[in-house]
Amino acid sequence: MHGRAPPIFLGGGTKIMTINSINRRSRIVAVVLLTLLGTAVSMNAGAQDTSVPASTTWNGLKGDVFGQKVIGPADNIISIEAPKRAEDAAIVPVDLHFKTDAKTGRIKAVTLIVDENPAPVAAVFTFGKDAGVTHLATRLRVNAYSYVRAIAETEDGKLHMTETFVKASGGCSAPAMKNQAEAMASLGKMKLRVFPTNAPGTEPMTRATEMQLMIRHPNNSGLQMDQITRYYIPPHFIQGLTVSQGDRLIMSMEGGISISEDPNFRFEFDAKPGEDVKVEAADTKGKKFQDEWPLESSSL
Image: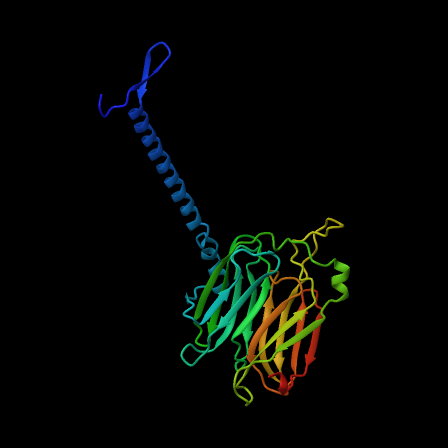
């Protein structure tokens, strides 16, 4: 009997099992549970790995936008930043940074795309030849979990793409922050904010100036419902925008429904002291808006 535990009996003298057999079964159960737990963890890990889906939508979309043009990698020419999980799907901040030098060539246009939006092309930005734009930020509506892409076209005609995945939903149908009467009362009003640069240099065209342009406009997507009448609000958004300084173009934009309410653009460019900055915009109802601001040397 040495080395063996005594058997356990129930009433009536029926032998059930020994302590050793209980221990063996306990170990077997533990191993099974650990195996199941490991499988569950592995499955969860696999689910996390596939939480960012394949680019199925983009594969069917890119030909419609760019035809047969080859789209290459970003190659540090363009980068994009956006929240992985947006706090508000109707105002998702997106930051683009551009690298332009003699080797890469000037970026002449950038197309901003939200794969899963009803109208995926959010905007196409075109930059002036000597504008030197190195940064552009705006706010987008994101209607479903989606890749947000920026495709830069350099002067040699080559395309370079960067993308990020944003978890957000319902942005295109989210109710407006203002009621329609309030929105129409301030329609087209603009504000320009200048952020002085600390970059060295005193000569014109040697320093970048950062600006933020804000335009009052509901930018209705056509998918939003009036909370009082319960009818859908017709699409009404800024479709054209031009920013210039003196007689030179800084940038222009062809916009769509994915640009958020009260469009907001922050950009950095090579400014000339003493020349006014002029903004012209037009919306889908044919309304035109414009404003002009002096740019003092002290602002640069």
